[in-house]
Each structure stands twice: as structure tokens, then as C-alpha cells.
Length: 256
Image (cartoon, rainbow, N blue to C red; front, top):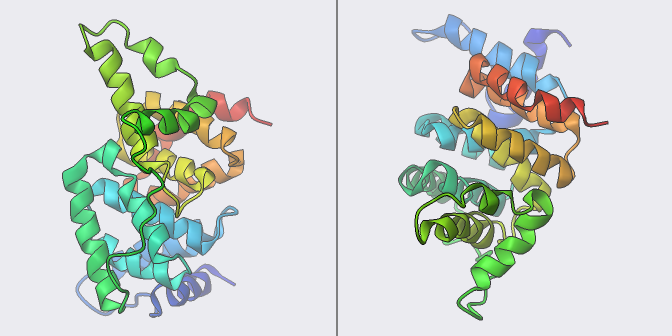
């Protein structure tokens, strides 16, 4: 297939619509957009439509691009993602982008679900039982430690008073305890989506490098990490792609 045919095929798969022509006020721009994302990037690398759409949903949530998120929640369903997978991808953005932006994305997601006749609320994916006061910390640390060790706790011992312990604890309890203990997405997928989230966020290169290591430990191949970042480029921009690749170059080059 040539580029035009690839673009048409991917648009049909994801949106059940034709690729852009000269119609409308900005047909030429839409042809450039669709040609790059759906004719070029979507055919480069190993990730399938399902994983690419989870990457896209994550990036659009991070950027608060709600009209585009609405379209890609639908595309994710068309690509075979379950509603629970889409929800978990959006939920886990909260510790990184904050709760308000995540709530806005959840509202957009639920609008699409309702339009598809999907019953809400979706089934619970919570695994915490409330068995003890420190359950969130203990179970979060069980996920965090094999991937990241205790580097965060060691890095912030300089904080004054109770914050030296509270800040690392909050990270463990919120990111790993509240979210990563949930079912609906496996650990490998969660880590790979966190990588593209941090790349799209910008200014988080230290955390990005750390999470690339985590993604590799969780089972992603080097090629999958690069593929996810390149796929995100049409949404977050080329400079953030290059910043991400430069930040994790050392980690990726050291990987067989």
C-alpha cells in the first residue's frame, strides 16, 4: 500500500470513516495530520491498534485535549480496548497531571461510554481491602520496590521535619498503592503508558528516565518504548519526542 492507502485503511479501522479530502475549511491541514499519524507513524513499529490507542488516550488526557480525547476514546473502543482498560489508562494519570485535569478527562470518557450504551459505573477494579491503615503503603511498595528500589526515599531525606518521610510515602501510597494495585491493566502496560505520559508532560526528563528503566524491568522491549514515544509525537509534538529520546538514550543504549 502507498501512504494514501495506508491512511485510508487506518482511518476506517479506528474511526469507521474516510480519510480527509479537500472538504471543509482546512482539508489540506487534515490531510497532513492524518498522513503523518495514520499513514506513517501507525505503520512504524510493533505496537498494535489497541496499544497505540491507549497511548493516544494517555497523551491527550495529559494535554487536556478533550475534543480529541472524545474521538480517541471511541477509536479505542473500535480498536478493541475494553472500557475498563480505557478508564484505567485515564485514572492512572491523576498523580502526574493532577486530579482536576483527570476529572475532566473522565467526564469526556463517560460521555462516549454513555453514547455507546455502556453501563456506568464500570465494574470496580479495586484490590485494596482496607485491612489496615498501612495497606496502601505496603502493597504499593510491593510494586514500587522491584522497579525503583528506595531511590525516592533516599533522595528526599533533606526535606524539613515530617516531610522527609511524608513525601516519599505519599508517592508510594498514591501512585502505586491507590492506582497500580488496581486490576484492568497489567504492570507492563501501566509502566509503558507512564513513560509516554511523562514525555507528553514535558519538563519531567528525570522521572521519564527512571520510568523507562521501570518499563523495561516490567517487560517492555526497547523497541516498544521507542515505538510508544514516536507514536505520541503527533499529539505532543516533535520537540517533546526528541527531549524524551535524549533523556532515555543512555538507558536504551544499555539495553540489549
